[in-house]
Length: 126
Image 1 (cartoon, one colour):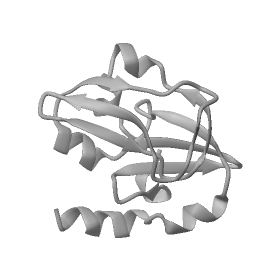
Image 2 (cartoon, one colour):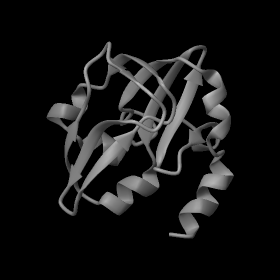
Image 3 (cartoon, helix red, strand yellow):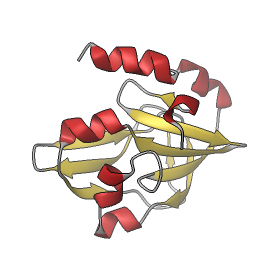
């Protein structure tokens, strides 16, 4: 996916929307900050989350970081490959490293997310 077409949360999750389904992952910036990702804890399909709620964890050699839902909805698919091999998260964070897909409850929540340019500026201040 082209990062410039995505929406971003301040907590470094990205969102790509196709109809009412949002694909969610973490940004390349987040992956670089974490460095070597060793484990990803994912939720089950069918579980619902509100925007801002923790839906999983990413563990690296440096730290354990929570994953936050940038928009609310029900999980319709989980990238279970990451549970056995988290490498795609580091190698292809905007493609094969996607984490979950959710059916968006409230599309208006997307307007609170940053576009790529605003997200880049936000990262520069870290």
